[in-house]
Length: 308
Image (cartoon, rainbow, N blue to C red):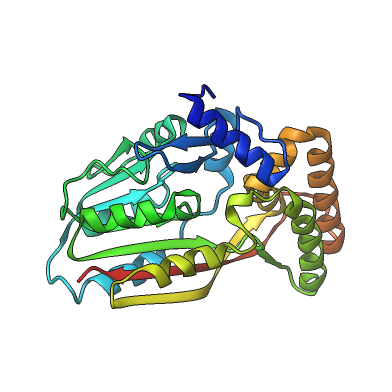
């Protein structure tokens, strides 16, 4: 990453000093918005973007339905414009298409947007490159501002201010995230599988990004608490089941920032860890193929808030 000026250099050096950890500038970037405040920028290398597209779970339709149920009593008509901020590969963006005349996904990553556009089949969905804190919309133009599993990387106070600017009266802010400790279910092996999962997660915790702190859900709850809209709703755990293979579960964990940091620092160790966990899961399930299917439980949390 090229530093724009002395301020950028000093800011990054301060980050290095505070965290006490090596930062890989190619893979883990800090982006300076026009106001000079930093936001985190990850997930932009093409090989990673491809893995993200393949393994990251779909955002749950149930949350989209709850989002629309929250909005509909406020406005008795089809909504005009939804903006999905930090849309990544657009898997969540397209779920909004049936409810809005126009849906726009935004992201800072050209590689993620290229993927989103390549797989976009909805004529009313488009994509734009921009920071979450600088949305290219007029004030009071947007019916829904949402971010599905990305808002924890934003400059959160600036993003909330920007969302408030672009939202119409009675427009909705909807933020969604999920716990990193997915659970697995496979008959009598369920308990053993989750002990193995915990071993996987524990090995990756030392590599967690310092910007995320100790609790992802707390980041979102703090945003919920700081939102001044009186009409708002918080749900701290919505369990969503999906059928996956052992390999796809491993692949999803490998897309997490902690695993990516380990991989960039010690690629051999990262591969050894994945292989070890895969083998232990297969042994606990008494199967010989990593393509064996099982149930993965993802625990989502979300906030909805309606602008007065």
